Length: 188
Image 1: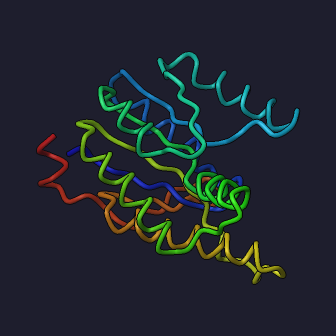
Image 2 (image 1 turned 180 degrees about the horizontal axis):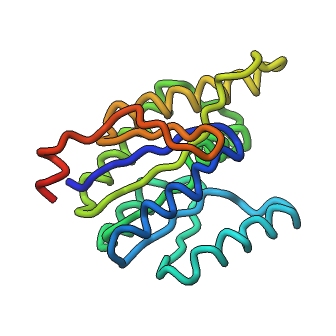
């Protein structure tokens, strides 16, 4: 089983750049799994800038909005897999469920996270997950936003519990919440 790293923080905290730099300290091949759907021109431009930033560092990009476990399995030959981001993945799962006339529960998110973690067990390298900390502000005023907050929080808890290392990004600075044990890190 490979190493799992979770990088969390608020919007514009520097988490994606930190995760990418961490991934680039590891040898290729590198796979970037993008969970963001292209919704409009502004999003298309953001995605283009992110792709351009990765281009010089041997990243292969895989776009997968929902079946994250399969995407991770598909990248198991890579030495580093970077998933950006889990909170968008949760959003995408909620959207798909809504289209089908269903809703997503915390138990469902926990199960889907366990599937992703099981896929990580098939990767011999490092899997880095980026996610947003969305529950540190005011309580959302509508039920859908509160459900998203709760589901993203559940996802983050499940992933952090199994991660070897967890870093919280604040104002571009990394704060280590969970450090790898030296014996495990040295065994790679």
